[in-house]
Length: 387
Length: 235
Image (cartoon, rainbow over all chains, first blue to last red; front, side, top):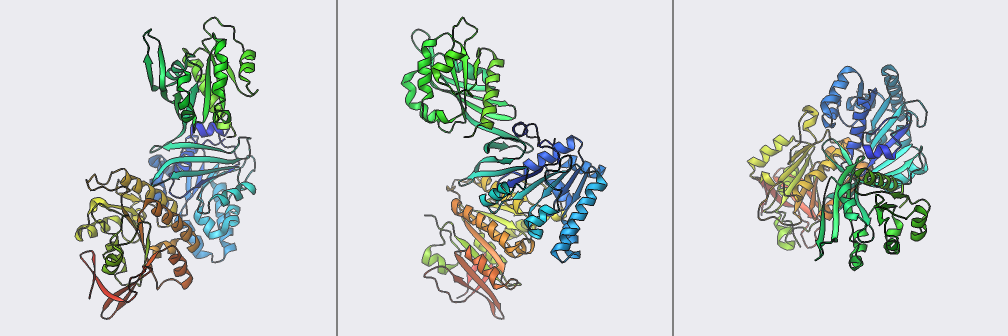
């Protein structure tokens, strides 16, 4: 396996990229997506893979200076575990080989010889100028073939100026084992980056888009909204509080000292490579008019119900009837199971009319481990759910 | 609606400048003042910003030029595709971003987004005359170099994306191309992306320009010169 070094992405891929695969990171113009390739290079080097980098757009030193782990890469170039074919290689080939066919042959021979003589495991290719010089088929043909098990893994980055039609072509023609397109929602400035897993040959994961944020050297996948909903007093605020690394609750007490959420609970956590924001909704029916807005654009719902109060199941069912809720991944957390209760899974499933694939967990939201197990299941469902 | 003053009195008097989203192509022969004309058009007026993609001069040379010609350097961002060829280790700062070469359109696109974001975030200047969206003049100096590094069709697609973004940002684009170096097809394709074309010719008695694409503005050749970084039409 070759890992991308982006935890959430590697998990979605089933712990990484199988050896011998051909992968493309297809970048929309202007999107800071080069870290996908840089992180994968860095991870391959950390795992002591031998690496060939083909960067026809820049000199080797200029390439190293752009890489997120500059010094490390230079050291690897010096110790021979990284070989770079750079802009000078392209110039030499283009000067000496005037015909297209002979250029293709020259590239293919050079790449193969470099792989053989340096025992290369992974080839990283900055594809645009090869594509321009040799055409799409020609450029792909000079690279190690796709799908040869146990052979060289090839990872390509390219700037997609042709839009969705090129991605559709890549998918329909099965030219790659993994196709990841990288986009930005761009209004006046890019404000929201996301990638889409367009195709994976070794897994049944449906097409999936995931937002991400970038640091100077890392990418964090981002789940902008998971909703925690349920009847009043089912333990949602405790759930949010124990799920979160930091958070806040907007609640009010009545004359008896009973506190209830009046707007929402908010929590943030970093979990399994994802930055996650969770929203706890108020449970009192008088706040129902705001629920559709809170649920809007959510990526998943965790329904919290009180195991000691079977009479609240009807209210829970009512909450699941919200129009946008029915289309989202759902996990049910039957809470307060540390107290005496009669509720069982059959009763929950029948009362809520749950699909068979909806997980139901019996938990105590006072225990962080229980809460994190529910969150973990929800992340799994978000990354695999066909929205 | 905001208007970008050009310094070309014919345009500014008739139209009060050019509207946001415009793209201006300067077609100029070598050894003319076309490049300086581009900088004169890109000069940020009060409240405006200029972003320069340089494929010809190093950013340090440009900064000297801007100082000498009294441009407001605090309002200018540079994407430098030249310096890294000789100084690979040079690092970005808020106002100057480096890409590995003019062929690196991926890097140019990313640095463009980054420097625009900095302008929008107020990282260039927190002056009280700030407008929103901030008016930006984006100058590519030059398409001639980009066309030497990348194929026409690829560059056309790239510019198509850039011009769409400029339109969304309500900015203007200014581009210079040496019209002696390319065939009619290349010039025609580049013109397709433009609203205004300024042609420059150099003759024994001086340099002349004419403006095409602005309704109501004369298309006659007019003598001009660049003085202290500003365009002067000579009557």
